[in-house]
Image (cartoon, rainbow, N blue to C red):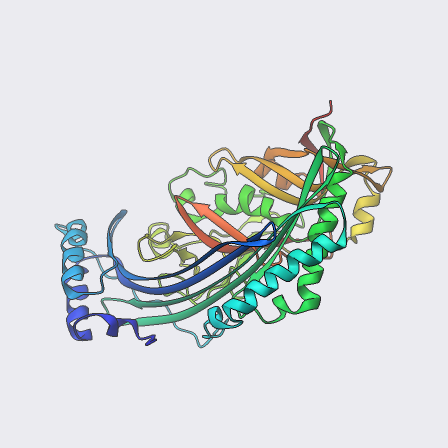
Length: 471
C-alpha cells in the first residue's frame, strides 16, 4: 500500500493542512495524527486452530492543546468533511485563548527498526503448521502435559504526524510475538508455565526450530517446577528477584510514578521529590526507547519526538520524569520522547518504553548465598499498583525458598507486597547481570494499551512482606 497516508484523504495535502492550521491557530500545541494498521493473530489450543483474526484499520486524530486543556476528535473516515467536523469540535478549546505554538520536535536520522510488513512471512499455512508442531512437540515431551496453547501475532503500523507549522513526521512500526503456555497435571493437581518472545522485527529467529523449542522447553520446565511446588510461607523476609522479566515490578511500582502527568498533578508518590534520595545507593533506573528492534522502542513517539535514553533515578536520587510535550511544557521541562497513544482514537500521554535498572557489581550467586532464609522470585504474573500511595501486590509465577544461602524447594502462591518508594530503599545488593525481558510486555493506563519492555539484574531486597498460603 501507499505509506504516504495524507494521500489517502479525498482532497489534496494543501486543503488538509489549511484545516489543520486554522484549527490550531492560537493553540499551544497540537497535531494531526494519521494511522494505518494491519494486524493478524492465530491461536492453537487443544490440538486445533482455535482462533484467527486479520484486521485493517485507519483513521485520524486531531488535537489542540491550550494550557492544561485538550480538545480531541477522531474519525475512521479519511475525508476532508470528517476532518472539518473534527476541527469544529476541537477548535472549541482555543476559543478566547491565545497561546504560542510550540516549536516542532528536533529531528534525527536514527531508525530503530525496518519498514517491512511481517504479516505475510511466513504464510498463514506455515504459521498454522508451526503452532501445530509446537503442540505436538510438547505433548510428546512429557506425559504430564494436559493442555498446550500457542499463539502467533504480527502487526504493521504506519503513522504520519502533521503539525500546523508545516513539519511532518513519519514512522513505520512492525511488531511480532510468539507465546506458548502449557498445563501439566498429576492426579487432581494441575499447574501451568509460559514463555513469550517478540519485538519490532520480522519473525525470523523467533520461529526457527531451535528457538521455539527452547521456548517450549522453558514453558514446560516452569510448569513442572510448579507441579512440585509447596505452599509459600507468609511473613516478613528477605527476597531475591531474578534478572529480566521481574523488572515488571520496577515498571509498575516505580515507573508509572515517574510519568510526568502524575507528578504535575501531584498524584504520584514521587511528586515533589526531584533531587532527593528515593532509592538505595547504587540504584539507577532508566527508560530507554532507543534500543534497536525492542518491543517498547520507538524511532519517534506519537507526537513526533525522537525517543531517548532517559535517566530517571541516578544512584538512588530522583533526577528525571518521562514526559510528553504538554506536561513537559507545563512543568518547565523538556519532552523526553514518551508521548504515546494506543491509536488514532486516543490522546497521547506520558508512557514508558523500555524501563530497566542498570547492573551493579554482585554475582547472582553472591546475592543468593547472602540470604539465610527468604524467597527467590524468578518470574511474576499479574500485579496491582496504586500510583498515589505507591502500594503494590505482585504474584510470583515461579519462586523458591532460600535456606542458608541455597535455593530450595519451589513454592506456589507467593505474593510480594510493598510500597514502591519504600521497596527501592530496601535494595541492598545489585547483580551484574542486567537482562531485558524476552519481548512480551504490554502496559495499560487510562484505558490505553501500548507495548513496553522491562528489565533488571538480580536484586536483594531486605525485610519485604510476602503473602503466602502457609502461615
